[in-house]
Image 1 (cartoon, rainbow, N blue to C red):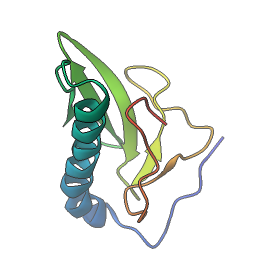
Image 2: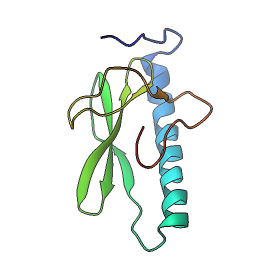
Image 3: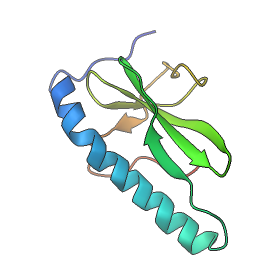
Length: 107
């Protein structure tokens, strides 16, 4: 199964947008945990590597988990299937979308 590539986006555009998108996602976590779980430590998001699919991981206390994958070619957001691979059935959104297509619990 293959997910169509957005030909209007380039890897350079993804590299430029990704840091801002990650800050926006972290801000969403900060607001969510600050409002609903003020006594818990807020999880932090970080880029955990990847060439074709960029892994976005979440550090929550002493454990890490994959929050999502970003396709480096066009910025498509993909759900994690495993620690090492995304689910390739369909994209969950794009880092270029004006609306935030995610929540703290995943996609």
